[in-house]
Amino acid sequence: MAHDTLQLQAKMRDLFAGPFPGHAIWMDPEGQIRLIEANGGHGDFTVSDRPVGEWLGWALENYERKLAWHEAVGDDAIPYVKLSTGTQLFAAAFGCPVHQYDEDNPCARPIVSTAAEADRLETPSLDDPPLARVFELGRLVRERVGPDMRLMLDCHHDYSREDALYIGRALEELDYYWFEEPMNEHSISSYVWLTEQLSIPVMGPETAEGKMYTRAEWILRGASDISRYDVWHGGITPMMKTIHLCESFGVRLEVHGGGPGNLQVLGAMGIPGEYYELGLLHPFIDHYARTPWLTEPIDPLLPGGYVRIPQRPGLGMEIDWGYIERNRIR
Image 1 (cartoon, one colour):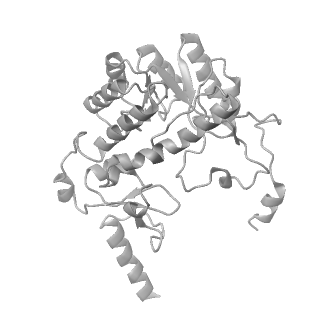
Image 2 (image 1 turned 45 degrees about the horizontal axis):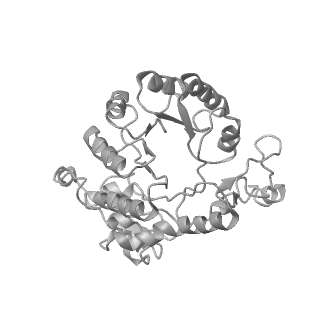
Image 3 (image 1 turned 90 degrees about the vertical axis):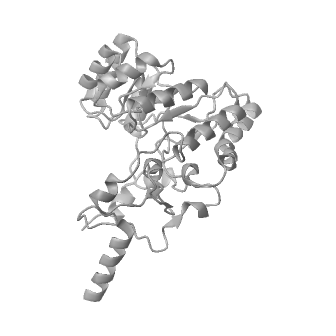
């Protein structure tokens, strides 16, 4: 037993570079971790040495399938192309190796184990890979799909003011539809500064706490063009209050995330949210397999890219009580 414990400790030191207790993540890497390059060209395009153009077919495959459906049935819904990458691209920009799990998002592995090593890291430029590859693929997709396709970018608040302005102006040239939370959302003045300088709609805040009170400050200060909310910020009641707040100021609101609560609120909004976020997971994860305690999915995807709002009482969920009984903890 002692020998096995020492082996485990050695593995964790090798994998997660740490004399720092409590800063390791154990995800059974034996047989699970594989280099993103081994993913047949369908891994994260930002951390590959292959030409970005090799990912163009992957990015357009779903869009072209939607177009064929729309033409066949005369559907007037607007299909969309989604360019996805994870926050590991920022670590990769500093030189961290990135691995792809079989059933999870890509993960960056550490490259430093001391503060001195961290101090020697150079701040990457937006013109260097992997960050520059995001813009390159966006340009290739825009050239292929034309000006009528709506493209958006969600940056997950990691950029400085100057970087966000650089990206925003690049997105304007590519005619992107909106620019979401590029900076730390606690700095409202940074968003006021950015929104005043860009013509592309800036969206936020997405994750800032404070419920409708925070959104009111953003609206009054002109910190964004489109507001954002979800039921995970206090539930349905503060979300409806935020929606009514936006209605009063003539500000658009887009719902963040999916699920039964968000879906019901989306159907009750006086100001229509254009998009419902469905299955924001790794491509290898089955969205509908994540709720086996339901008799049927709450948000099945319909032809044309639509989702129907459930009509059952409450949030529209029908619980599979047989599943609950079989999985009780006794």
